[in-house]
Amino acid sequence: MNHQTKYQPRRTSDGVTAARRARCTDRRAGRAVFFPIRYADDFVVLVGGTEAQALAERDALEIVLRDGMGLTLSPEKTRITSLTRGFEFLGHRVRLRWDDRYGWTPRIEIPKQKAADLRYAVKRWTGRATTTWPFVTLLRKLNPILRGWAHFYRYCTGAKNVFSSLDWYVRDRLWRWLRKKYPKANAASLLAHRRFSRAHRSCKVWQADGCEQYQMAWLSVRLSPRMDGPCRLHLDSWRAGCITKGARPVRREDM
Image 1 (tube, helix red, strand yellow):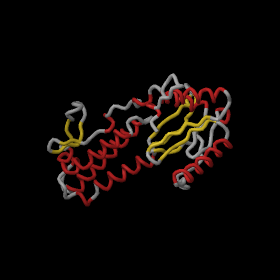
Image 2 (tube, rainbow, N blue to C red; image 1 turned 45 degrees about the vertical axis):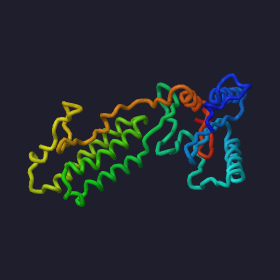
Image 3 (cartoon, rainbow, N blue to C red; image 1 turned 120 degrees about the horizontal axis):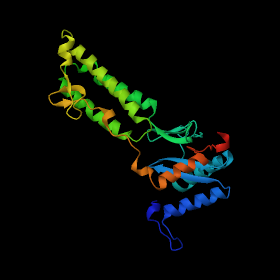
Image 4 (spheres, rainbow, N blue to C red; image 1 turned 135 degrees about the horizontal axis):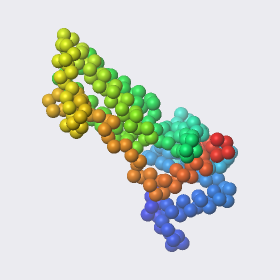
């Protein structure tokens, strides 16, 4: 249900603002606070309360899904975790991390397994099986993968460092691929494929027939535009509350 357009005569604000005010009221009164986040059939429930309240919420949710919609919670995907340990949702890792300047801070990070999967995909594309291709064909195969991956994770904390590491890996794999394709060529002839980029005149990248390797680290990394307004208030409330994926809370005093 879209609460942004859900208006009621008794309300003086939209549904999002009313729900946020209700959560603030419950938090001040010492009651448990639940904040669901859903995308298609995947969802996470942030819980501010005790572990018993979080477990009760999970059991109640399981009953509602079973009796009202004929659905069941997946035992493999449903788990109880603290925000300090973190969890993965929609390909991102969400967790709290201690910062000496700001204390416990919510972070959305790139999972290490996702970066490893990209390295494996690049390794497959740059194996001996593709050495019969022209170099420009290989670049045109890799660039859409690199560009899409970078845009998907550009809003994550520490994305620039991960992108730089992956760029170095891709450059190294392309060098190894050229060595396999031209085993008798010397290094100077192979390095001739590294020319100054059209986007960054001072940097050299692998190029062939006007196509150059996409550099993920050159993509602008910034805070998601949806992290402003209500989303920023929800993140701020995590510091004082807890989070679950299926359900277990973490209170500030437990951290």
